[in-house]
Amino acid sequence: MPATFDETAQSTTWDRAREVVPRGVSSGHRVGWRQVLVKASGAYVWDEDGNRYTDYLNAWGPIVLGHCDRRVNEAVFQAVNTCDLTGVGPQRGEYELAEKICEVMPSAQKVAFCTSGTDATMHAVHVARAATGRLKVLKFHGSYHGWNDHVAVGSSRADLTTTSALNTPNGGGLHPAVVGDVVVVEWNDFDGLRAAFAEHGDALAAAFAEGYVHSFGCVAAKPGFLELLRELCTANGVVLVFDEVKTGFRAAIGGYQSICGITPDLTAFGKAIANGYSLAGLAGSDDLMGHLGAYTKDEATIDGTYNASPYALAAANKTLEIMESDDVFTTLHARGARMREGIQQAIDEAGAVATVTGLGSEWCVYFRDEAPANFREAMQSDGERYARYHASLLAQGVLEPAFPTGDRRLNAATSEADVEKTLECVRRALRAAAD
Ligand code: PLP
Image 1 (tube, protein in one colour):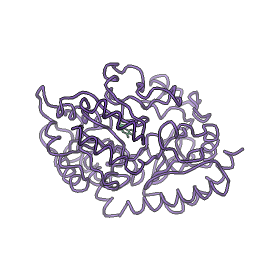
Image 2 (cartoon, rainbow, N blue to C red; image 1 turned 90 degrees about the vertical axis):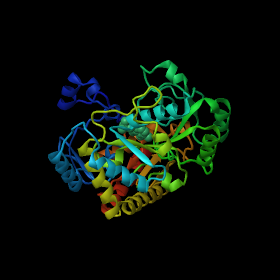
Image 3 (cartoon, rainbow, N blue to C red; image 1 turned 180 degrees about the vertical axis):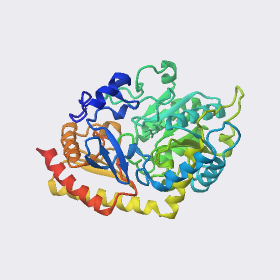
């Protein structure tokens, strides 16, 4: 881990939190900051010492319109003041949101809602198994799909070498038999993909892919790779699942599938759909989604006290409405493109061994001479130089991921002036990285 990733950071708040919460936080990526953030608005967040940061983490994806968006919050207040959780029948916001998603997302004929990306990918596995009667799942090396045992394999950074095994479990406590049923293929490895289908094709229930990988930064599929994946899934009767937890409602309102033109059978989504409120879901064909919801031993079940809660639905319906009425994607793409162009220019001027990649509102800076094509290559980004780059940006009030392959993103409240100011900070950070 880079030097800035300081687990022993001292502050009264951290000390107090560590007394009662494991490592002080309930989500692993929040470890390691000295900062404790107490306020957020638009493009900015503030720490408890009063320092302001331009936020390019955006909670790892959900904040897409801007922090504490007043319009979204008002829709939420109205929903919870009208009818809160009941546990009876359909919610109005539920079918309205599902109708909207079916309109904009190519793979969606039916949609079911849950609370996290981890829930959504778990339900995708259950549906695929119920539909095919098979057990195995294929996924790509380095891609993170949440913490359910079926897919929490092959994206651990611990012990990763140029020759380490692909299908290592992501953490302790996973069931070895479940892990053993996961086939892991290197991203962009055409021959490896063909070989995996040749060996396991008739035993695979599902193949999972982030159509555009954000788990180790910003790494596109090589031309033809997604087409090959689609073709092999169709030929072998395997359910193709796109994990659009990060790209859905961020790369485009219809997800990355609406950009790349490959339609999966199922889509897991979450994060940006509700601008920070906890909503996720699974979309797919009528046929496949028909396997979800029954209480029979042969079908998959979706059940959750907080699934499709009225406040999260209200947030999502309002977020999608604003995305369209305010032409949010034009703004996000223009600002993101300018950021990438400016960073590349700064890299060239500094003569730094670095490269910037990205899509729409997202980007990643790798301290290596060329853009990575897979997980191992991405992980070869120089951690020492990244640590200096990151520390310099943080000291200048720019909040970015604390590890080298973290993807970063802006939200629609980030102004042109914010971007230009950040580019000045990037120029100084590149000089600091070189020292
Ligand atoms: N899939 C991808 C691609 C993700 O990036 C994440 C989380 O970062 C997940 C799934 C899991 O989503 P959640 O954190 O909502 O459980």
